[in-house]
Length: 109
View (cartoon, rainbow, N blue to C red):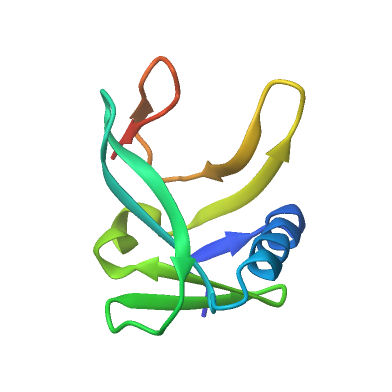
């Protein structure tokens, strides 16, 4: 069975770095919320205890908990990490996106 999301090596490395700084965290949570001019934005936060409304994805030695309310929006998404001169942060390649706003901060499905 294919995973809800795919995590690149760079993203997994950065997640490990984040979790090393927050010893009480079990993993990170990925979700969506209403945001920006296109409608939705990605959210990333720590998970400190298991929750029934989260789907666990374990890949490359890290745990990413996906908000079940966001599953349909995130199905098939690749989570990557970029650290360049112009941009630093998690990057998402989401096949469900139908468009993005001009600044790239939000998307719609």
